[in-house]
Each structure stands twice: as C-alpha cells, then as structure tokens.
Length: 157
Image (cartoon, rainbow, N blue to C red):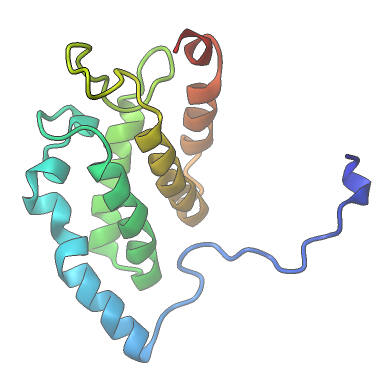
C-alpha cells in the first residue's frame, strides 16, 4: 500500500504527562502513587528483587507489568521521586540486555513449565518502554527494542 493512499492522522497522539489531572482524578492517581502501585518495587520481592534486574526473585512478568502501570502514573502526576525510581528501574533493564539482543531473564531449561526464552513478558515490557520513550525521548529505548528483533537472535530462538 502506498503511503499516499493513507489518510492523515485526525488527531495527534499526546505524550504522557502532557495533560495534568486535577480534582477527583488527581486525588485517585495520588492515592495510587502513594499506595501499592507507587511502592510495589520497594517491598514486594518479586518486583524489588526481580530476576529482570539480576535478582533471585520471580523473573517472568511481574516487573514488566508493574512498569506498564507506573510509568504513566509517574508522568501523569509529574512526580519527581516516582519518575526517578521508574528511570532507575528502566535503566537496570536496558543496561542488562544480553549480547544477542535478548531482554530479561533466561529461565532454567530444567523447569519444564517455562520456555527458557519466553517473549511474552518482553512484549509487556515493550509497552512500558514505549510509554517511557514517549515521556522522556530516551534515545536508548528504540535501539534496544530493535536489537531484540534483529537476527540472529530471533532466528536462534
């Protein structure tokens, strides 16, 4: 399909944090940030000590799902403390990309319940990373994502 056949966008997507909540919505988001969502990485071992950052706790999808929610929360509230924590957590993951492009933990092959290279949690992470990129413009995100899908890693799995 030629791009000239495509209609122009009717609306321009807004970056996370462009619209600031007020009133009831602000109070609800603030409760979320001050509660479990905003602090899960500080006390729940499966997120705080996740295998996604080299820890020995759960390494499948809990940290990616937490990031998927907390990235937008941090930027919607423009919460400097939460943004700094989210950035540190994203940094941990981006800095640990495997040489072959894989992101995240590799599961023990003796555990027959899981594939050693399970892409599902990576796709959840990519949603969070996309939102992080839209909010920050962090130039490491897109090359990290492209590298994940670049052969020979994809062909080898």
